[in-house]
Length: 283
Ligand code: AMP
Image (cartoon, rainbow, N blue to C red; front, side, top):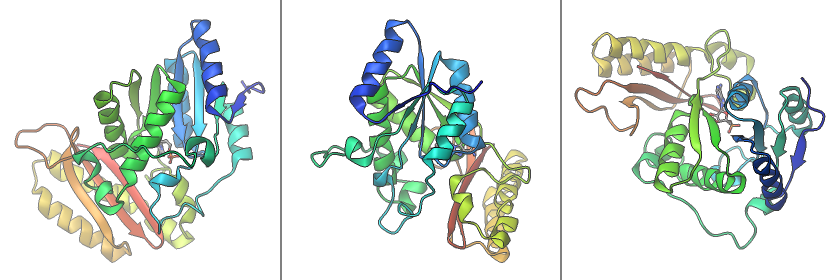
């Protein structure tokens, strides 16, 4: 049912006030942080939020501090009007859409580093990325103080970084992961897929196929290193490059799998033309 009364809040004081009202009514709150340009992946998080709490708060904030100087902050897709319509259709209770000055006034100087889990994989190729992510997520959790916050497994390392952040800083919100939503050909939905040319879009689903092949090798007791090497060759032949990483890692620490470790994750980041695609699956 469309929620024409969805509240749109632009500053922290008003957000706090509204959350106080919910609390006074004895209602629970779920937060879904996003950078907008909403797609079915985001909507699945909102559905999960609805199932977990009485009130659903979605934030839209394109966080400048998680973009490197040569990255796509300026051209990142933004369409608030469309996002608002979608959120209303999803019966969202509250949209928190602060501007950059509200989140980072000139005096703002604190940032959060999560340690080794933030330095590997994405952290290696995007220095400062997880410091930016950890800082904004900590701020949003402090501002909204939700009972539960929902994140996508699409950004699996980000999800584990946030779990670590919340544990280490004793932030009293439960963190839940929501499975990756894909196109019918396997490509994980992402706001950045909009950058793909028609030809690149044809090749893009090969990334997921590759993950499945490596996962099959790992699950079947095959030689994982050989399968990763073959997979990288295949991706390069298809036109991908550079491939930043394709790795099988321990699900919790994202470090190399210790012997006898049962739960792993295959993670990949690869460039296709100007678009950097990331994806992962469980093994
Ligand atoms: P973003 O707007 O890209 O920062 O993403 C906001 C949230 O949506 C993050 O928790 C993402 O992991 C999640 N998300 C993005 N794409 C997908 C997807 N295809 N499936 C599930 N969750 C997603």
